[in-house]
Image (cartoon, rainbow, N blue to C red):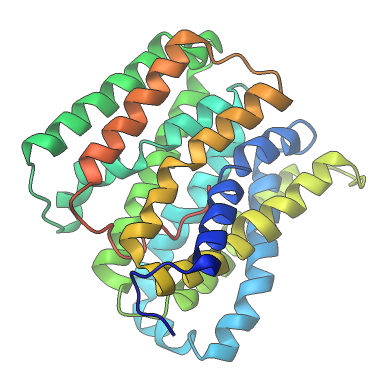
Length: 302
């Protein structure tokens, strides 16, 4: 087996596949929320992923150590799954999937901004400060002058802010409290716990009947491909190439989300949206280069 850091053809294939897979969720969420309530969409995809990953984690013996980290697992379940998945589903009722993907791309520099609150010290070098400034300008342009502003629904904007903060917090919770565990253990346990937490609102808002149509197919893709399969691919990629190289996927996902939204959903990004896209990705790259990504920070589905 090759040491972490080397990339053979299999690792490159996984890298390409994962870059595409994690750009798909925003498109499929948009399809799903056209028919199903947001809480039901979030709960369904989480439940599907948990049903796939729990047996694998059990077989690996990765669940037993999780019991010693109950508080961290609860916090991670809320920050990484329950809150972001529901929040993004709510946001996409009024905000384009392409714009959503671009806003979520600000997670890397959000991690830098809030790291100190989790006891993680990150040096603020000039390049990193420039990256934070560029990323912030991109978010301001997208929210104030781009397609998000045209939606006239600031509830959706608040939902995206909660999702971004949740994903950033989840990465730091792993780095601070769960980094020594086999990643599939806390991931599977957190998915199961998030499914339990979202069950009451999902049942209260569940449709009276479920037709096997495009929206139902979208939920299946979200749970099976974009969450469970994506996690397994990421575990493989980190083992073969290391977390630092795997983190580059962060900059591919929003490009895929934007292309899908513009080409298949006929969303209009506009000049301001494209400028915001470039600024946010450039800012995230500058803010996070020269360091390995926090362990676990890339174990994040959209």
